Length: 218
Picture 1: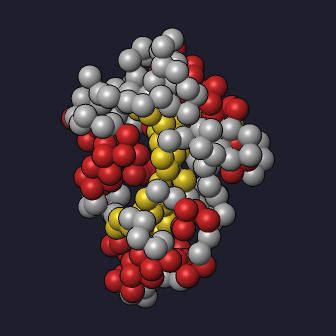
Picture 2: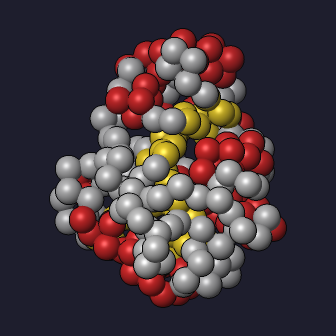
């Protein structure tokens, strides 16, 4: 069994609120869905019982992508349509996401982990701690090496900052080591991880970070 503290919804006595809840946010095109596709088989290999909630503005595009992938039971993927600024339903009023997570837990008793992927947003995006226990913010090298210097709340406050698409650095004229160094500097000791979702580089470390943060006995 995995030893979990109560989730953001409190007691696990009724089976709802027992699963750890992880947020994965970041700008459009930074590779959030691709990272989740890489995470899925690694979590499965560890025997973690998990599900995914995706957020899009007015579609279910990311959810359908995961359902079609063959990587996960489609019933374990829920979709939330934000209908407005993407961060509204993960920060200001996360009711729709909380309900989606509760429904998944009711459908799959024993669920240990739920990944909440935000809709593509800007550097100001953050997750409400009423929704998640721990959250990851993803930026990508192709978005510009100056992103860490812009010091958005997502870059600074997330529990883990992921710098994705590191393979593109030399194609877009970014000094990767300088970008990573600046990211570590503005985060004042909070962890930074470099990844390449295409090849899986760094994704093992992302799984380790999640396991260490919320799946205590694993």
